[in-house]
Image (cartoon, rainbow, N blue to C red; front, side, top):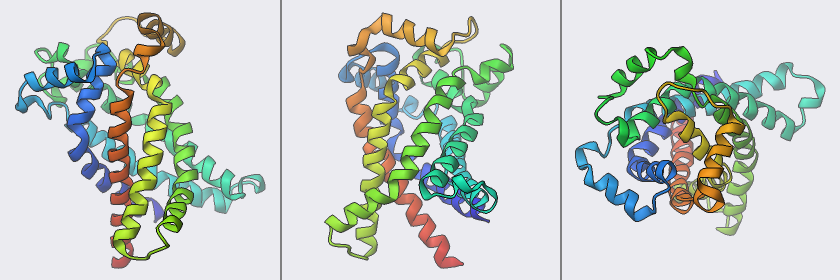
Length: 279
């Protein structure tokens, strides 16, 4: 089955990625929440001590593993299904890829509770209130089921379009990089191609959707209270910060995404190649 093969590769790549990039992601999160300069956000995290550096890592590890599993697995499954049973107008390569990518990205939104808990555990305001991942999940239950999906609308608005762009451009960029490198077939050359392709797309897409993630984090760092609509939350954040502070942390996010998506794409292709060799 295409789903199981691709899903296992996506999950494995996500675990490698999160293990490497989580500390940097935590600094970026502090910048997004408090509009702090990088140096202040870095020293804030540093002052909390090394034992808290990976506090909250389990939700993103679980969420990213499941998310990448669904992203790659469902993309392959939806693509195969649409190719076999879809209408004639969807059989064109771009439409087939875009439709499968959009459906996969939308399905990923079922994992919103993991992003929600990660946001709460990373926020220093809840360090004394929420002990760990299991406690955070149980604590949210007291506010009702809707609390698990606070912020799901910006996640839906982010996942579908970003998946379309990622899957549509990933292979063309990799091929262009290969041509620039002289089309070497060695494993090292292929790894570099995949890293650059993932890095360029990840950095570009994360920058494009950065303001949406700021709004999403602001929505999700609340416990209880009013549920704001996406337009209302966006207006609140804009009035609070203006354009300049809305993008605070974007340069660090760009750097982190270069590394994160480069590792993810390279690891995914590496695991995929290993599994194909084992067949």
